[in-house]
Length: 387
Image (cartoon, rainbow, N blue to C red):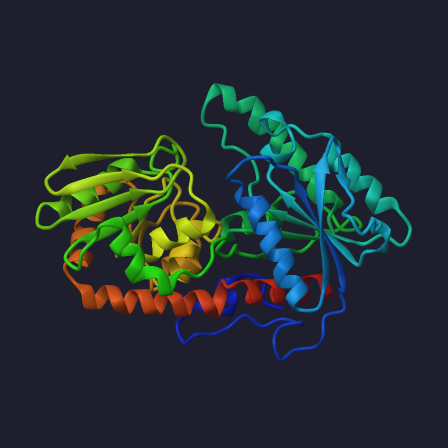
């Protein structure tokens, strides 16, 4: 069974689709009851929580009894059905160290998994790694990175199968701790999908509502003030386009809403918190989605997936955490993270070429349907659990 997307569809040339036991046209999945364990969150925006609920919905649409278990006060809380973990075929833990403990310190988590592993007739244990550990690039992060590495090895040792949202972490975990009855637990690459609805049909009315006429270039990005985003790239791209035409730049991250000019004919519009439909409509209304990350675009970026889902051309960066399946894909336009001038030039070229934008948008949508949509990923998960 292929273990990375790139093994399934190298470069995505030729449109190969994911193939695994349990996929459309394949054998019926043996895993019929799954518990999805996710850290309880009261945050307005929690991508892993939203991901887990959408994954559960997709599994249920495939006929699997998928239930959400919220990790609360050091243990997973049973759903309303009062189902027991012992009665499940599999549990899938959604792992980000920071979701389970302050500074990512959660010693109770590997203890719980070890106890579950010792139970007779236990379910198959899978761990989905949305994050692994912080890099030790500052004195304050050395200690934190140390315990997170030890915790990851302890969690991995309890798993029967490991899943990673990006290819570089998949390879990292294959080189790390031991699990699975004294042997290495298999590690598979499982990307994320979009956490937003498909808003393509709302593009025209959304542009009208946002004040964008046919000659206006609408740019969108997620969380401009986030330290992982390259704000210089975003602002430079908007100003390069704004030297010749009107630009509306929408910052879709949390924070204080407001509008301000950036020079030339560019207006920065900070939206503040929006519900999922509003975010989707802002993205669908865009001409270009800007995704310059310090570590590069990757298959863990739900907003990049939302842009592909909504048929919007993606301009991003290729960094050390970028997946080959994206860097080799002609559907995305990528530049180096250390070259803001290249990013600005690429943005200006896209803005001046509406036909190319239309081709890239349609190709990106096809790429999403082929490799990243929820039914595809849910079926791949079942294939991994049944292997």
